[in-house]
Image (tube, rainbow, N blue to C red):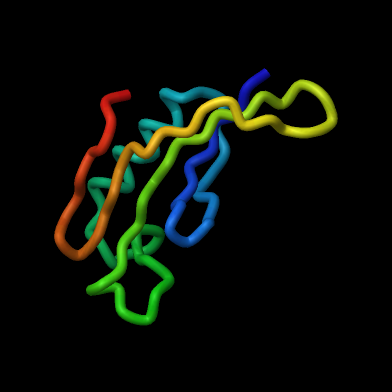
Length: 89
């Protein structure tokens, strides 16, 4: 069985776990539509004007006692400069 996690790689912050890649992409589309600087799109830096978020979708295989990362894609970046979709899903 697989679990898909959205991670802000810059801040090592998990933004949610999802049963499918499509569900994770839907959440990223929702985040991309939010203004930057508004939670949960606000970066936890002192100056959000010079910081941002790099959202990755990570697929984990959850069979067995330990999760094994099987895929990691940088999909979306957000910052005060705007939204950038990195990889077609």
